[in-house]
Length: 66
Image 1 (tube, rainbow, N blue to C red):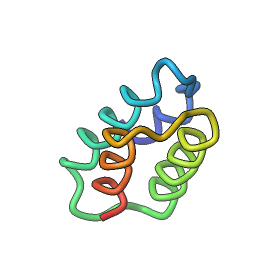
Image 2 (cartoon, helix red, strand yellow):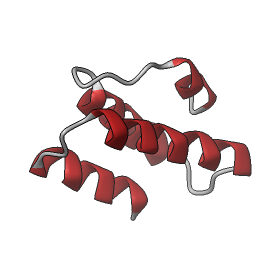
Image 3 (cartoon, rainbow, N blue to C red):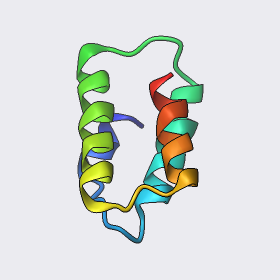
Image 4 (tube, helix red, strand yellow):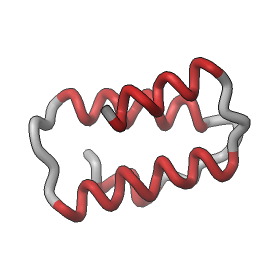
């Protein structure tokens, strides 16, 4: 679930996997509660802070935001 993302530590090795998990979770939501939005945005911030943003990762981030 989206709240479970709070318990996921993002590392350079798992960043793309976390992005894919977020994409999968968001497919099931047409709207987000404020707390869920904060969780997703904070996790995206963590991903950007620890990762080299490759084209694949960048596209995945754009997909989530859009």
